[in-house]
Length: 282
Image (cartoon, rainbow, N blue to C red):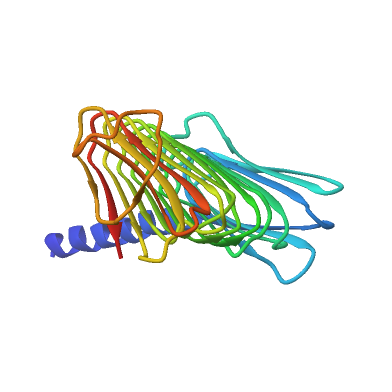
């Protein structure tokens, strides 16, 4: 009998603890009317931010707070909206976690900052700035805007970004570019791996650089490029038959090459100090 009572008390205690946790999680929604080319920024120390287009001239922010150790501060001044997770005393990575889903006009300029992320932006054509430490960054279906990304060790993936001005800086995170083209595509990583799979289109300048990481760039046989690749201490491979061209360094089999293909509409630079470089034919 006493054993049954103890079990019953334990079950009730677990149920009540779960109720407290559930009660501590709160949902909040904020709406802001904006005009053309609005500026929207979201700063969140812990937790994900997901931004996608709204159907009208309104910014809609849905926030899920994991405890009462964090608050959502917001300001709205004419065409600028700012959202900040405000950590209170005693907050940590779990109790200070906030999950954001943000709907913005497709032409809005967006800034997202989160240490842990993940950060995701999709189907926009304004400028996008994403910054994080270990945050996983996912950008897809963007067109015509500037994309600036800074991470320490978080991986970065861009998919279907057209006519974009893209600049990515990462210390140790891997960077993957899938169907990305535009007037300027610049990636700089200290130790992360860089993978490009596209057509180097748009008559742009493509610069993929890493110190110790590998670079793998895949393009179709009809690509129109002026390409230069060099690795001081790493191996360099090329699958294309290129027309020789002058370069600022001496071409050396296995470590450096330079040449053109087609009308050489786009400039492509693949540079590493000790990583392997491979220009692959799709």
